[in-house]
Length: 228
Image (cartoon, rainbow, N blue to C red; front, side):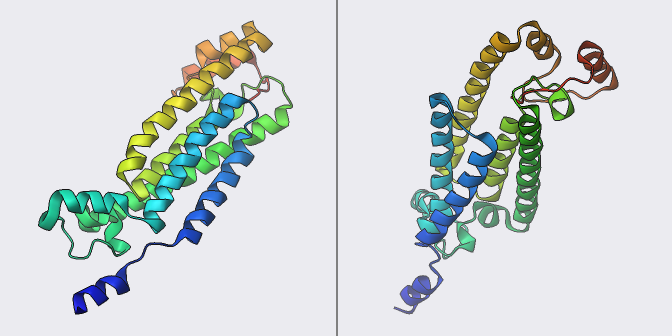
């Protein structure tokens, strides 16, 4: 009986208001930076919404991953009370003190992603529909999606779950597909200028080097870009 009371006292889930607040807060942020307009953009945003709901539901609402792992591992699950909030954090359960490293790394990823998305959004806003190839767009063609992927990676590092680990690759693939569709439209709008930019600038992974920057400067000069 005492054990049941202790389990009840330390049960830290069922906080559905916290689930709703966190999902809405991040969605407002994502909508303001990504500004979906077309149907395919809203579909990708729907995947992001599902990812956020799954993540924060397990963080504050119902610890599905903990239930699955305890049912699979039984007494081999490393903690006595898995339904406390701290023991729902898998890095803390399986890695002990090393979990701090993953949490801090997650913070770095999320902060970096927010900064990248903000810089990309600012360039788009100032461009007013013109093609932009300077600033952060010298490094990658799709900085806002890169930023979003960094934020998602940070969330996975912060609070890994079975569902979100399965959903994340699907969501990333959806945004890569969306980026390719947008590039076709940019080629139609800007023609050879965008094709030359595309040939010299990676989509998602920047390539650093003095020679590369000089090549882009020679090809475009100080032009403005439209941010993809």
